[in-house]
Length: 191
Image 1 (spheres, one colour):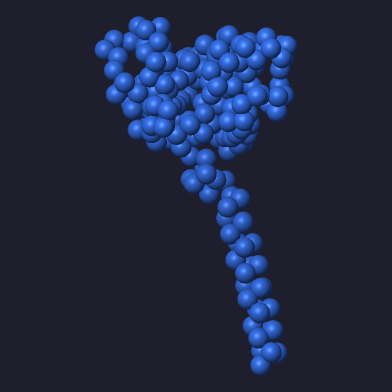
Image 2 (tube, rainbow, N blue to C red; image 1 turned 30 degrees about the vertical axis):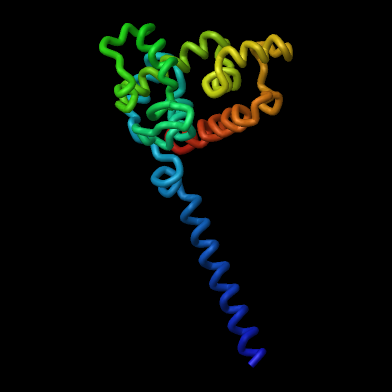
């Protein structure tokens, strides 16, 4: 009886290893990654505004994936809205800068408008922080005022790259995740 149990146990272990190997092989395919882990909806809109505002479309896709998982009607507990999770006050300011007529918070659920506003805002942060993606993303998540304060307080220059020095854990993790996802989007879609 114990012998049969041992044979059965080994057989189950082999089957489990096979299922695990097949699962990992499927998980690792570009097809699976593109369809389930790193989708890229709204590509045409993202590419258009990436080109207009001189940003990487893969960075924009990574921000959207991190912020909303590509759900246009997403709302955060803090009140951020849409694909790029714009705060209403920030979006109102962006609308004024872009001379966007008839602005209302509801338009932030429209992918075209949300991506336009979010991309414009990333570009404004890029100008402010001199093309430094770490500082741009930290400002997008933690606030441009906070990043400016940290730069003064800690003596960071425009060449700052040490994500681990960002004092807000949430912002530190956000920047690392978006940069990692940007790289993966580049690998999957940049060919």
